[in-house]
Image (cartoon, rainbow, N blue to C red; front, side, top):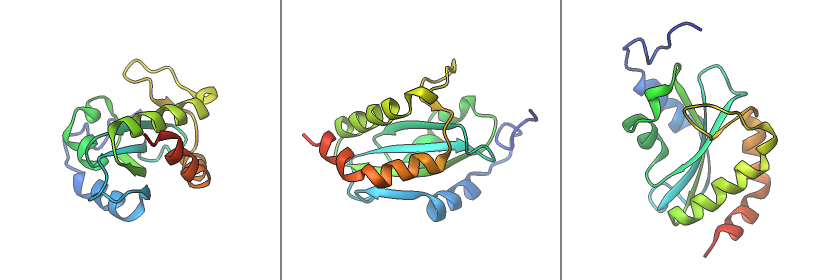
Length: 139
């Protein structure tokens, strides 16, 4: 695989932010009201391999300003964000999603949160089960 845009030293943060602002499907609490987030993303042009995780800040900031990009070869495309009140709730929902897609789990040295599942399947599952996910995770 050729070197990525991000590993090639160029700054594509602006393009990735535009994708995040315009194309990310958001559920749950707003960015202003949430205390934590469950997110899903894939590498650019590869929507069949997705990472499902959680964080306690805006997913875009978490991925771009943290260490999440250190192992990536291509631009991350954040396509799902589910805002919740607390990190505990986010962790419970993340674990539930990992269980849902466990048959598609990928064993990667850098992360145990990758799945061979199309982004649309993840979005549809969260859309269909949003109230159950939120209710199950509530304190």
